[in-house]
Image 1 (tube, rainbow, N blue to C red):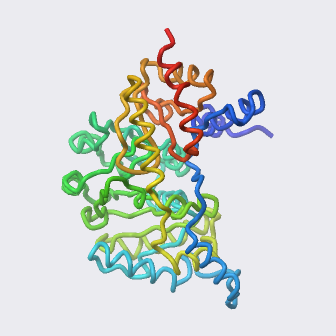
Image 2: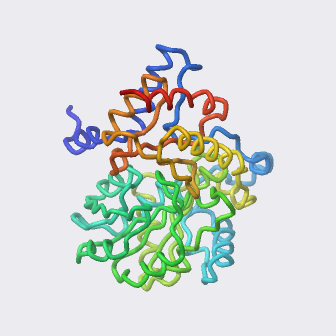
Image 3: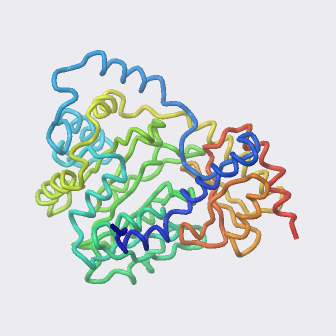
Length: 385
């Protein structure tokens, strides 16, 4: 039996992030783990906050009846009510439990919504550079990816977005704080975007990095500022729970088709095979929904890395959030420069993997001591003729 041509094509374009992760396995075998500095995966190296682990113990010890069984496909009503109350308090909107669907992370939320709104050939706008999995999520549901360039500071260019909207446009995916650039989209830009978004277009705000911001920045509330919006949320980054796959989809109460969309998403969540979000983790996040890892170590590593690279001669602007830096590569061919870094035992992801050549993504999840030990390698790569 042969592999589907669609999957074969997608494998050819598969994520550079995973490709470099696999390259790291090879390098560790050849050189020893202590001589490889991995800046590729956004896999938190910190442990979840103690409040999260304590809540997990309580939930497991309580072993409430049917805590491991099926529940409504949208998730436990009591858990959804907790999330809805917090969304209402943050946004000033009348969220109810019915507007919230517990999902298998933000990826599950995005796929659930795209499945509900896309017919074959419908278009989804993504802002370049963008998280490469978006392309596969959209193509999963026979949609067409429409990349739109951001401005020189990686901020949304609303005029370009407006020009890209066609009668087939069904969604615009926003990601702020952004992966890979680390920028935060300001309130003024979101307000401007709200002026051009009209039915049937929905803005999907992918916000797993929302609590991971630096320098006391407060990301604006997309749901409050953009009427036709939905939020895909994950606790993966906030609580360092990437492997537990727990998140939610929140549909704005201002969507006129809200009732139909609620039912459609509950249905697509089931038929995509998720069935429901992990039961135990639903109860855990309901107990401590705002628990967040300490961002200070990430900010300290951001400052260390960006300052060191800038002193060497790299152009390395400081990210405002997430746990990524996105410096320019000193040569236009970012893939060639990534190969040069590999010679120094440094693993990075080329910007071309995110749709923007001439850059590289560096993850701040690397241990601080490894970051410090990697710096001479960055300098040697820069000085190579």
